[in-house]
Length: 505
Ligand code: XMP
Image (cartoon, rainbow, N blue to C red; front, side, top):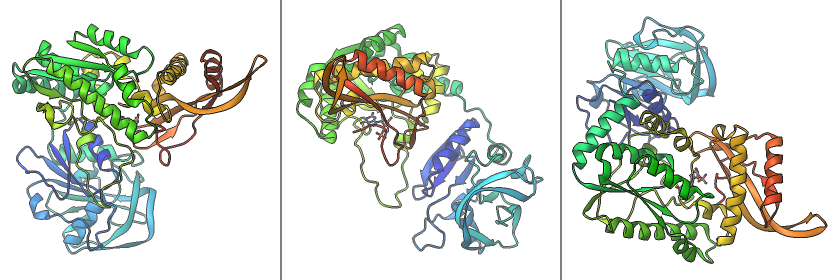
């Protein structure tokens, strides 16, 4: 494996994704929590950072720890190594940001094999390496940045000023592959098929004949986790699917049927009334989330206790949920509490198994495909744990849920019919309890608003609104206003995240 040491760069996860796209397993660790570097480690990558090496409190690592390993240092990492070796790092005259082209490259050097002069690279730095000592060979430059790439002579230590992980660095993938394969000697055998095979074997070994409970949500992660576990331990996996009354129209029944077809040992629990009762009159988004989380735990706990002698709780946690982040600017503020991150409380006293906790979202999909899971499950849009409750502004009632379910179903079906569903990362309707005047036939109406939201995103952290075609929007609007009683106006959300969020609550 490859270890990526994170100095807090916004691109660190991208480095990991690129390494894995090259079928090499890697892990991200904070620079101040270095894991044991045993013989399974084939190489180390140092990330960039929002810090400058010239700052007093800049992240520091003892480079002596890495002597035995090939090392690729990106941006801050490259500046850090230069500085530690008596090189000179200074503020650049102008902040170097964006595209540049290599004006000099030594493609006899292993790292730059197959990369030619003029190749476009992407820079993002405020400091620049002004001077490197004699034992550093400069292996790449651009017009503005003389030390765009270096090798510490007679060692496997390399530094690059540009970012190979972003797509604007056109040959970034070649460079990373050169490092991983030619310099570290990695074999590119970390594929979805290999993951499935080894994970099933590991789960068999770990779980033996124990019973496991898993909460299914209908989403991609819990579905893939369930099928993996099912392949490993069969009927000893007890799946629980809770109907909180806040799912999409008919989703509970159809998803339950699909899971049964897949052979899962699954119990569906109708808890609609319990959720709605606890939500009655609750207006505050955070209190709504907390109430839903609380009831979910109660319902799930009751159901789990009915599985005799259960030992394990399985969760569909994925890698971005557990990557330990480098806290530089202090802990980030809680914007929304996601009730399903952080697991269930201690009183369940079960051991936790998380078969997907090394995977990124796109890898979960690939693993799902390798497991033969149908695209109607793998391609489903993300859906929040608190469901439609956070798409109904203010208090939630059965009537509002029913209206929103109808409008949402019309919206989603139209996206599917227009062939747009798979192009959109996430879409959903939002119920706005704002009444406005309309006219239907000869009658004055005074009804609520439905807002349509559709976003493009990679991981939900940032998002942009989708430019859906007007004719499709027109058809959806017409259909909702004509068919859904209680709605006389449809609007489209054209806000990106940030500054807005994807959900309205
Ligand atoms: P926001 O609204 O924060 O959403 O931009 C980002 C992504 O997270 C989902 N989301 C949630 N998922 N429990 C979940 O399981 C939650 O409480 C929750 N809140 C937001 C949201 O649907 C989007 O994909």
